[in-house]
Length: 171
Image (cartoon, rainbow, N blue to C red; front, top):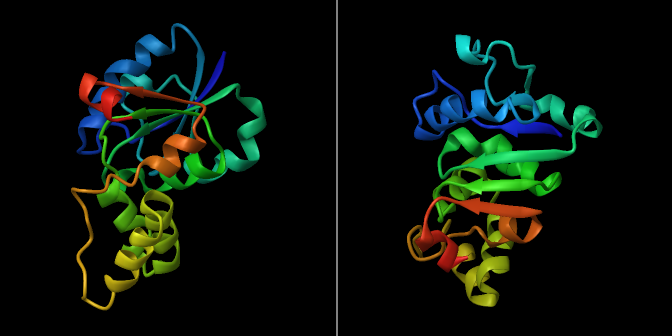
């Protein structure tokens, strides 16, 4: 099996980078793994033998893989992976049940309120659209903790892996 693996890696200061640093040597024993990362940082010595590409190269390389595997968290480290996972679905390892902080950074934080409004509408219907429209007018707050904004990613994914019974039950 040929896996395209998307994740921040050490030395990035994130738990998911640490998780991937521990998982990848074992996963590489079972599959042909190619790393796609958001930065051009050099790989740690334990991963240096794995093929490594900038995440932006995945669209033209995607035909060389059986499965894209996205490690998804709720921080800006996952901005490019999130956008790619919607465009090129695969299997998502959902490390954080709520992705609202990530979505806010990806969309609203860059001034792309149209995408944020669509995503809120996807999650909550007309009430989500109404809330999202009011946020840039300072008439509503981002519902960061009450709305996980993960449904669009979950619906487009081939499969989802979670680390807790809580997340499995919520999904």
